[in-house]
Image (cartoon, rainbow, N blue to C red):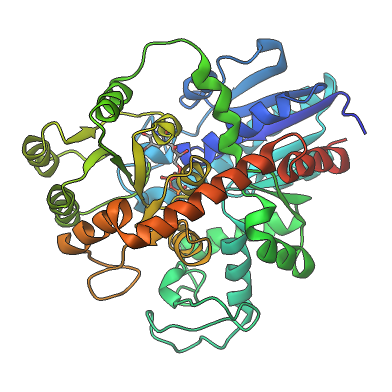
Length: 463
Ligand code: BUP
């Protein structure tokens, strides 16, 4: 069944972690002839998007810039992405502000509809209000859900299974449909584990979940082979249907083959490779807020581990300057935006200490780099369970008191870094992540499960 004249509208949420996978999806859609793509964003987010997709033929893709609401009292002027919020406590005012873009979005959607039509809208789950716009225009909406089937499914099951009610936050329990899996209430956000039942965050989750339930389907950045039990369960018990079309980061593959000047971080990795050293890549994503005290323990642990490391960090301050001084030559601290996939792909990189944002975890798996999981917020605790306990492609950092949340001392950091890079447990993890990487690449080949699923999804929904 060939695809002819399909026009897909993509609307990512304004943060790098939510935008990047949708841009990969754009690339994948455009590999199929007959598909054109329009991406909605705001003025300030548009340069990143245009640059990211700079190699794509202009006639196949257009970017429409909407006005981001100004004069929201809580938000600093000019901030159009959660990456630039002074604190994640402003997430809800930010997410709610996006709703003010609705009239402008609908006007643009109408003019696109009259000039040839829109086949479907794929918008982020956080942009729940786009469901209404899609409904008014008679266009199917698919929800881009940047989380995996595991997190998606057990969060829903937890909401219905009351057997955990009254347990302490770190007390282990199991859900009867998944008896092989140990959980604690601390693995879930308070809005999902029953401890937060009102307030702006709770309302936001309710509102977006209702919009998702009305949508035509979920586009999931994962692949069937690794989460089949959870995906099958989800599609048997819940609606709308979930479609696994990832790992989307594999759409990036062709980009580094082109000749260009290497960034300094890559040159540094080349040098480590020449010295025969394996490098631990350290990054906690674009959103995590780490206290000064915790940062110090990370730095001391890394210093004492004696491994080579490249740390991409958003925090400034003395701790990191002191560390750089102490580990000159062995460790590099980078404070600017890097291409993470390119780093993970580098031959010298043999481990990733990561917050387990789902994109980062997938990128590591795809490059067969073992993960040292240190989740901070959002769905990251569940991702860490998936990575370490289920898939066995990583080891886990736990707090000094054994909890999945809380303060981690430098001795734990040191021990776990050594274990991942040189230890026996690391050996097993390395073998498993190699297999996982191969399975991921297979899923994304033209005959693979994710490729076929995306074709099916377009044929069934975007007409
Ligand atoms: Br930092 C950084 N370069 O310098 P996650 C990140 N990234 O390419 P998030 C870079 O941003 P959550 C940098 O490769 C990944 O695709 C990285 O997404 C890229 O984490 C993305 O890993 C980050 O999902 O938290 O967005 O910080 O998604 O869990 O809210």
